[in-house]
Image 1 (cartoon, rainbow, N blue to C red):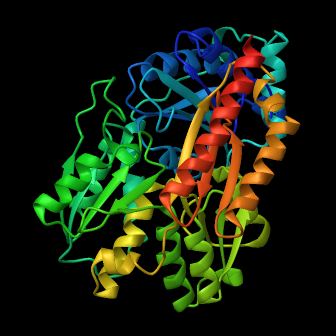
Image 2 (cartoon, helix red, strand yellow):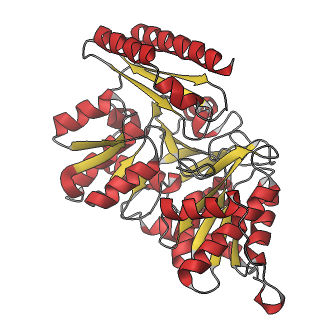
Image 3 (cartoon, rainbow, N blue to C red):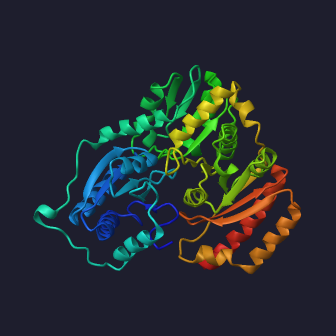
Length: 455
């Protein structure tokens, strides 16, 4: 990837490495590249989450787009997958999402979808970066050639809700669910969506104030949801992240049902119905060994890609697979969406749960979960540090020693974050104690290397 776009668009701390000026130039560059491709003025949809900085960045993007002649469809506060869906429905040339997903409110991001609702191709990202980083001239329009910002587009969220409801073909009546909207984008659609289903839904964390998005809530902080589910006797808890492209669940006992278990349950149901193309589920290298064992027992092929829903989707498109995702809750149901969609995921799981006639805990017990420890090691922001650490020969030998210690009854994954100054150390083993010890030993050595690189 280039210098601006990471694995999930442009990310940064607003006012530091993600500025109004950068957003303005991104708007200009995206519109310029689209105009080069299309041969005429582009139309670009824009949606945002509830961060205090999202309005500011939206204004900058709109100004940049309009300054070079592009028109804008402002969708307001809405989920990331809704932007992808509405970009296609409204025949826009691209869709832009202003969000940093599950990250704290100080962060924000800019993600671009193409006209088919897929993430912008690498070659187009590189062209956008080239225009920005080289300060290439981008011709500003004058007079009647200046772009326009169309109004009244927020009503389009109802079209997205209608689309989600159209995917529910089974009876879900009688269920009681508690929904955590993470004080994020789901607050704009989830209450209406669930009110139109024949079930009982209550909501928490639905009062965004610009700074409380993902703060002690949502799919990264599920304690309050788990407590609420147990205390209220709900059948299921549903947690979204800030831009509602992730979904994790809580069973009636308060236990988390992660993306691996959701894939196992929904994938098995698709196979039962003869709809599991290629007899395969697409996951990532971060998926738990329990999912590997489940798929082996069920005779389902588990295809693993590098981390990132972009990589999952590419494999799904390449081989016409219909379900894939990540342990973190990014789930792609390709029959209905071009990207991960938390609200869609919740609806698909609710159908399977109701049809099974079982409790959520019983349904999730089909897929075991090995003890897993994930340690995020902070490293310097200096370019190249993560790459040099990962290439260290002594680290490589230490990794081999630890893998030999696990003796085939666990696994280790070292992975530099694509969006943050972190190296992630993931270890699975037969016991939590073994996994934690191996993870800490590796993390300590990475910290030492990082310190040496920084000095």
